[in-house]
Length: 490
Image (cartoon, rainbow, N blue to C red; front, side):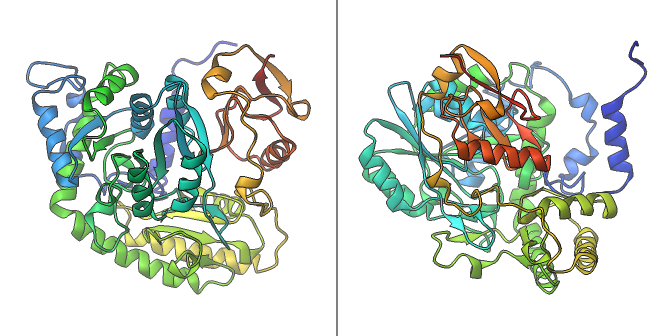
């Protein structure tokens, strides 16, 4: 039957979402417009959708207005130089890995990195060496890694090209990055930082310290997440001269689109101007709102909001209070179930959920009315469910409470070799002992359970069976239903 070419399914879905006046507690941080700068809200965006014309500069060889905009961003953040990115933080991380690592080198990184680093590993050929992250108890998610763990890994793995840290993690928690930086400098290692969720940290003393101020050599930030830019608009800062600028520029020319969006670049320039002129004042209001929300939610039976009291003794240093991490364990149901009810019944969309938690992002575009609606909805859900309700919430972050490091799949070959090898498709139940040819992650937050080149273990199979049973959204897998896996054909 022919398709109706008058139908616009995506447009219709977006119109419906927008018209329903949903409460947006998710990225992008402009909240559907309120967090955007006046320049972007009043601009003629279709008229700004242009190409490299006279006077508009060239992203891949900037010497005019783009170069000037990048210099302004670098000055605001105290960076040596800044690159605008229109392919998100994904391309920034991949370019940094490609510029600093090779097939003869390893990249040290925590397991809870975003799956986008796979592209950098495939392009560079580097061997990943995963490091054990800290697990935050009660909430049961992975945060940063300890400096002594890093030192042990560096002692055992000569030939490391760089160390990659996540600061903050998806849940807003930061580790001892200053201590990590000291270890990196002691061993002559470059420190790369995925600061996708931390564009705003540098701009307010009530937030954790940002990665550049703690000594990072290079940082990538998703300005669209917490800085008020449009989705895919990010930037990459070089903090020291230990990374050759031109190598990063060359990697970006290779990996980033040759047709960059001027609307996205303009949103970066406008976001920087707004952050410089009004950022601290906007964050003052946001931190006050976040504090009030946490107090109210903590009074709801069965719920608990992450605070500093939960981090003591874990090795996690601090947290971003504008990211409400809400444990629903006391309700006896999963975070997935509560998130579904918030959306379906109350029109409230949070950033993510896992087996035990909700993550609601309060950003520059978040209004008081929306936060009060969240508090009201959670109160109603708590009353209707009550503590002790039958639970479908299993722990997918730590596999039934087991430390991630105890069941990391063995690495048989590098991701690049597995990616380029011959492949075949096998049923999930028959994949034990085979080598994965794909990356599989629950999304969000996009943390991989298995990488290409790793052996598929019984623990991985059990994890994936649980994910499949609960209908969790999967990215990376050729078969998102997880009935089959792609494996190396050896």
